[in-house]
Amino acid sequence: MSITRRELLVGGAALAAGFPTIARAAPRVDLRLLETSDLHMFVLDWDYYHARPDPTVGLNRIASLVATARTQAQNALLFDNGDLLQGSPLGDYVARDGGLAPGASHPMFRAMNRMGYDAATPGNHEFNFGLAFLERALAGAAFPYVGANIERADGAAFLPPFHVLTREFLDDGGVSRKLRIGVIGFAPPQIMIWDKAHLDGRLRCGDMVAAARRYVPILRAQCDVLVALCHSGIDARAAAGAENACLQIAAIPGVDAIMMGHAHRVFPGPDYAGVEGVDAERGTLAGIPAVMPGFWGSHLGVVDLTLARDGDRWTIDRFETEARPIYKREAGKIVALADADPTFATIVAPEHEATRRWVDEPIGEIARPLFSYFVWIGIDPVGALVNAAQIAYARPLLEGTPHAKLPLLSAVAPFRAGYTPDAYIDLDAGAVALRHVADIYPYPNTLVAVRVTGAQLREWLECAARVFLRVDRDAAGPQLLIDRRTPSYHFDVIAGLDYRIDVSAPARYDSNGSLLSSDAARIVDLRHDGRAIDPAQEFIVVTNNYRADGGGKFPGLDGRNIVLRAPDSNRDAIERFLRRGGAIPDARPWSFAPLGRRVTVAFDAAPAATRRLAEASGLRATTREEAGYARYEYDLT
Image 1 (cartoon, rainbow, N blue to C red):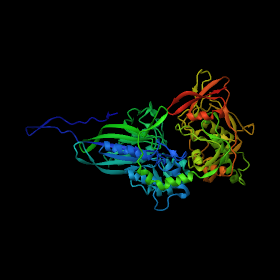
Image 2 (cartoon, helix red, strand yellow; image 1 turned 90 degrees about the vertical axis):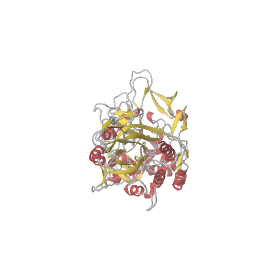
Image 3 (cartoon, one colour; image 1 turned 30 degrees about the vertical axis):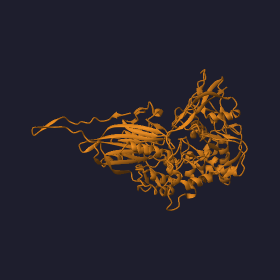
């Protein structure tokens, strides 16, 4: 949608030396800003987990949209907003064993160089494989990287805080105009928590808004247009150190356009409708044009600016924002809206083929089906596998330590629980390959164990239970069960305990992990070995570095109670467990607390989940389908 931001004052007719002078309209330059974000190593439209093409992902499809967008605008710039290097088996393969020999180029940057990117900023996942790998990878980028709130531990710059692109653009009269485009970048300061093992003592990452207030005025004095690449989302309540601070950065004078990411959402669009300071239809934050292009290459962000010359400066006269998709869902089917650029298959062929061979390597067998459709009602054989593998890995490492005699528990959250309609695990009993393990555990987390009390365990589970909406005991019809504002990877289930969740009680924590009410309690009948847990009793819980170092804002988890930092990843632990023929337990740590009457809840899962309904007593499929999901109902009695 087109919006007038500043009125252009042209002036009227004037008389000079007795002759009328006709006022000339100020020259205008149309400038198109294009954005990708959260590509997560989906260079190609290929699903490594299921060994098949996938038209819903891929930079090779985005490349077609970029080519079209450039033909429509004579002046265009292309930016990336981070989270490039991790997120698919291709990324894991390139980074394994230290990754990238000296002088080798990263396949993602070979593809991006082919597209002619102009600038980029790193996302949080760029740091997952360590600084040495990241710096070797960035050396292959043929475009500048910026990062205003990241510096080395000694205060030296890790990346330039900003960069000024000097470009020749044609104005509306065909005259070449030299413009200076200032680009500044920001990453969430939580990288110091999420990748503490890699970054502690090596980097510092400060508050994004404070960095913007420091550097935007400096950059503004050096450029005609200022573009903020912010690997962050939107939170109207964001305070100092916030993870999602795009709205607050947009409000800083001098910012002309803001490119968002991190949250894996689409903007403009309904996801942020109703948020104060946000126009989700027009695509503005604090009146500034903004865009967020989904994830995995699902969309291309487009911001069109019309610049008008005003004296000795350029001002933004009009703008439009758009997120262009590479596909749509129609009548339950995927319809591709962008073709794949065939040159990309050649560019990344060596790593792509090697990754396919790597993930197809058989590692063992499973004696029972594994699926993740019904995690919201406590049926999660995938989680049972991961927890069993984590305990089996950690137990021998804890032997001979002061922690060995404490009860050993394990926590895991579901990663494949419907982030997209196809994002589920569904494996029949039989042979398992490495790609299945990568699908079960898609993140490169390392295995960590923490020492906690019974009171801390209860708070941990209360924080996890925020994923549920509050259920009304007296409502007649089906009620939605899941609060989609809370990611599934924050729903930790702790094996070795028995407990119930009362979804009719108010949540103790909100979706951001902040305490709502100290009186609220959803966790009831919390037991270990059949006995109620003493708040002072101590336990060892195996988890991952993200959670143990404070990811998700779980109370009592901030890195200070870690007793084991393993050298291997959680995925490695699963692989070893399967290679050794480990048995998957049938235990279900939690169930719903009885509500005293029949109450029906509903949640969405893939239509394919119907093939597993026999494994979920009392669950039934409805006829409702929307956006690729099917609705399932379950009676709490």
